[in-house]
Length: 168
Image (cartoon, rainbow, N blue to C red; front, side, top):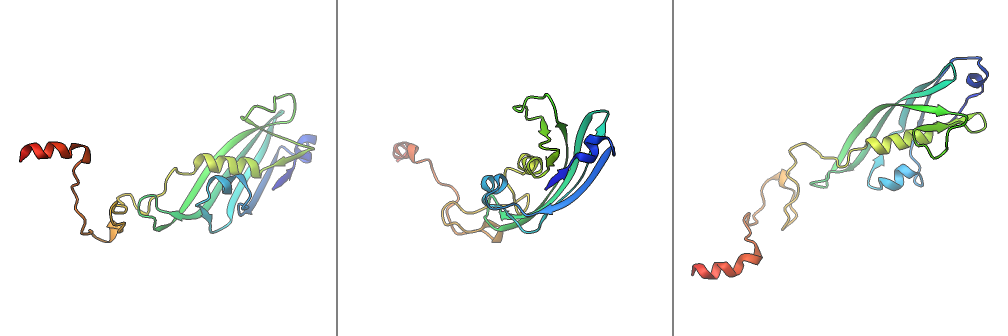
């Protein structure tokens, strides 16, 4: 999504509201970093660009629904991500190496890049089906949320097996 900044830059308006939705493309940075996440619905973005006497700021709220595997039991999990953020906009003498700003190119502002960047920063490092998920048995692989398996719970450390012979 590209926003035409001409009305703001010319001084005709002090703010521009925007609203759009998108599905992260398979070749996007977001999809390449989070390969195991499937965005089941379009990501909804609403926001406002304000010009306050030459200082411009982007404010946005993002809502996304995604599906992934539980980090403990590998069952499918449907989750939501809701974030709000602000980003400063630069159009002049600011170094392009500065990550604190987004830049206007040819009087247009690319909104997709800062939205995807903020989503990557806010995505949880792991998603659980529930807070008390028991996960999988390390021996047989049974989902322990469905009940206990028949595996031995206590396994002695094999490095200490020699000491067990001393007890005999």
